[in-house]
Picture 1 (cartoon, helix red, strand yellow):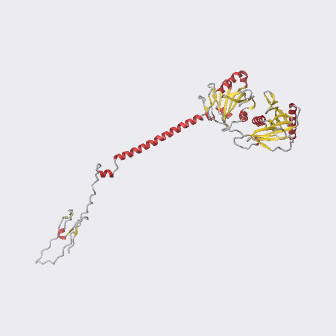
Picture 2 (cartoon, rainbow, N blue to C red):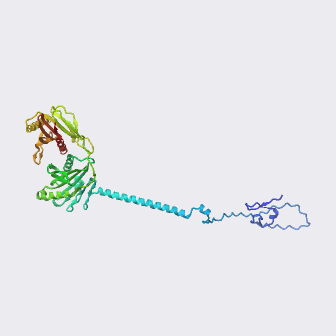
Picture 3 (cartoon, rainbow, N blue to C red):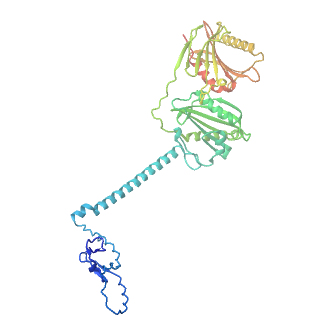
Length: 477
């Protein structure tokens, strides 16, 4: 069988016989219709003439010519799709333009909403920050600051008054201003006690502590309560003071003290002593006008002080009782060695950092001495007994009466509900130890009752107020 030749088209199954291929320069497949080109066969060389004709031997068919089989061209891919967007099938296969537009609009609205929300948050934050700054604003020379953080307001008096930051820093207060006229000065201090009112002793102690830190050689005097004073329309304590300022100028001034809804307020005014001697009436009138610029706000509306618990304690050797503040005073066991000692209380001065400071403590003792014929004799007996007891401990003890504006503070006074005698003494035991004693004496048929308040000399400003409050609670049975 003769060999056959397959169509070069790989996709076609037609085969060619040798006869169909022989001598052809091109060939068309009758099945797939593809035309193929073949290389031309070389011409056969002429045979030399021969003398006689020979019969050629039988020939086998020549091998098929080496036709140039064309490389099949790649079948062209399908034509690009041409969608008919109006056809139902294509509408189902592709998202509609309306849906695409709707999704785009949804994203846009979401972005706009987020931006609007952020803008609102920033606006609210800015407003709250401004409110905070207004509540805690720092006074300036040309505005009327609201010290609302301390439930108060102070309006600047205008020229010639100007803010003095150096004075404010050195005096350690919230506001300080100064007038070139008369070299007049004013300072304001605030303090928050939260859920309680500061006692008279705490108000006074804070004022004197500030004054002592700034003025050298300070002397001060608490004005009597029978001369009513007011600050911001409320009853206030007041003291007068004198000392030398940082420029070595002797000044005289006043401090008004007020407690309101858990806050403490101190209003200081002062001027050189020489200016007060020349124009004191006008300067003090100006101080009064400055105090009128101070107002309390209506914060902590409905505020009530948590009542401080008191404890009643009765005497054993005589018929009397006292009421002391729990937390400030503790009832101690009477010390041995003094047969006349009937009651002992120990005081612990409040400390902002709650540190135990023995140097700030005080004691109150109650002695019961033999009865005397009258109050004058009772007071003399009490003083002699106390001096004798002190001399046994400190032989060189020096006694000096404490003076007030009316002279020596040794006078008849109300001790609770009873008429008694009150003395205040500066006791110098040694060069390093100085003490303050307040003696209240009541003469009773069952004995002379002596109340002794005792503290270090430098803490007298605070404890004298507490001694007075404790003496005021004295009752006889």
